Image (cartoon, rainbow, N blue to C red; front, side):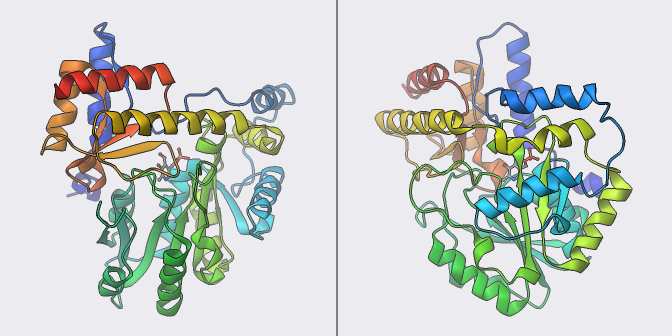
Length: 373
Ligand code: PLP
């Protein structure tokens, strides 16, 4: 059997397919499944894409990414308090490919990768494709979806090679406290475990203190991942990146890029290299308003959740025991599409994206209230 046959199909896509089917049949579906900003890409970036075409910047590029973009990324990282030169950065097709490359180049067959549940749907397939095994560090509602250090210690074996840390988190919107990140890093540093820091939501922090685990990890074991997708409303452009000081891993990732993609789209790279000229504060302000409104509405109808301090998701306890059934029925009967927590290894919960207009969010809550009777 081919390894791909062992990988489950995406539950997020299943519910999306049902929502699209209903929508194309003329139904007024409110789709709150999306993991992407609903804003257009900032004008300056779009104009630079036109410019790229005008100057015929349309050939293969350096497979590690054009120098201009890697320099921009280096400057972005300096703003975040990290020092990575352009030669420690590789441009990838979105954060997703950055993570895939990071997993593939750090773990070998039969080694173990720790995933903290609830987790993003694509992590397990990445680990499986690398031939490695998944060890799940479960976090609970009662723990505020924050990893417990004792549970982490109990999972570590001589086969543990990497852990993925995603804070702000998809699907919970939770930001891991600095103290916990420090403790995790102490353990990974001591055990020489790679930390794949998935910081794709770090531009969406509404309250509380945000610190990246990247601050505490031994640089030789840090693989930092980010993308322009969420921060600059550029999901379709597919521009992400990896930063690492580990030369061996860097070379491996560069090799994967060269052999699998040749390079990221030249026009998208050129445009993204002007990202620092784009003001994205209006998007942040709007997301904050929506987050506050979502919390208020969810409280009003009695949903139970851990307050999301980051990203654009509300993760609440499923009002029906079976979250998949709840999402299916809510979609069929009230035309509101949400993602069951089972998709994120968290049955009994439901993810609502608030990357949609206040009107749509309001209407969705009205319908959920009606549904709950
Ligand atoms: N990591 C997490 C936790 C995500 O939710 C996503 C996208 O939804 C990504 C990485 C990848 O983002 P992209 O490939 O769109 O840049």
